[in-house]
Length: 463
Image (spheres, rainbow, N blue to C red):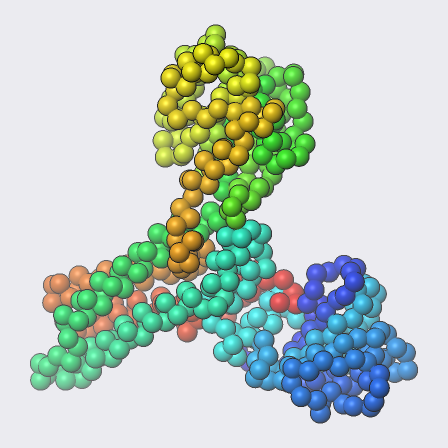
């Protein structure tokens, strides 16, 4: 795959703003930009300027001045893409942006495809594939945890770990392959004891990385929390209290929420997606019935279920709540369930003590006054294993990486079994090659046009 042409795109967000940045990359980027740049104080040429310098001037179409700009020069190979790169900082008028881009499109540039600047960075060896994918994750990160993981991956933490394992495995693979050349002489160049130790270590690291995906996936996509319960127990009030805004309609009329309402909140750097659901009850209302059906669907999709009940109603019907808890536990046995008694501000001390004695790990709350809301946030963050994040360990968030790691782990397991059963070197070499193949898929030593197309199609144009 060879890219010899020069591309152009808006690197900042589309729309009007104070400043916009237009990026060019390619062998002729500096030459093309130089043809339409007029310095404010001299007739200097961009082609004669040093790399990593900034120049004030005008972009001129024949005699018409389009805008006063700052032009940044990055000469190959010391640029983001590894090619000659020009970045033009202009005023953020949509008209100015389009005029400058159209000018370059008419004079030797073509419009960049989605993610093509980063694709060129990968093809020119500035980033490996997992680092390139981390660029997209960094752009889309919307909380501290996802930002931290993307930064670590973009800086090569994950890549270096995989590359080291791949290199060690390749060294032994070379020795195994060498043995095949001397098969008739029955010699062993690869120390089987050391090889077994290496395979055990690789298996351990792969297992840790695979297990980290459970945490990484929820951090990247947010942790869905379904707030469920009967009508008029305060679900919408709780959502508003968590978000500290009037997000959901609150009414004394039972069944106000007919559909699910979703919003996100970041707690200690972790994104949570709260889902206020329709109250669960028997009803003849067709619209409300559809909402209740959606409630069970959202419970199925949620990572955590919050069951809310009214402390006032507990005084008259305590057994009904216990039945409801058992139903949810039986239907979703693996999901964390948080049982919350709302409206505790209406109970006296003896009623509160009785309530707590009836239910283990009961959370007391008054969504109306805010009592217990912060404690609930702490409880929710406790469901996320943030230990690896705090220790700055490598965490997998990418489904493609996860799939390749699983396949590599399976092949390494075959190598381990082969060593235990003393299979022939040629069969052992096949399994090692397959493991190396899946390692190479992660970092990009092994790629295809389809794979690269799928990855970079998810990028924004201009990056």
